[in-house]
Length: 79
Image: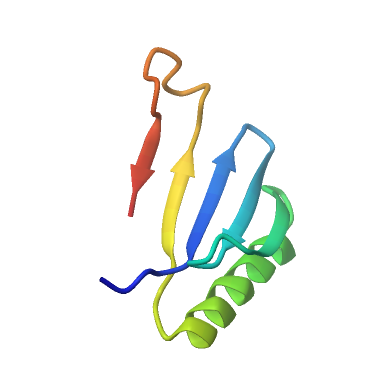
């Protein structure tokens, strides 16, 4: 089984935090995405495209919003 990079995004009301890790758990990128700043979204897309190119595989994206699902111990959505 080939391992792929993972992008984890923690979503909150005004901003989101994104971290991208390699299959060997090395942190490749860290970014704060302010929801009112389109350039932050552009930068996040650039990072994801570069990771896809470097590893020849699209990263698995995991989105977490702990406030949306407070009763669930694993509030993760996989895409």
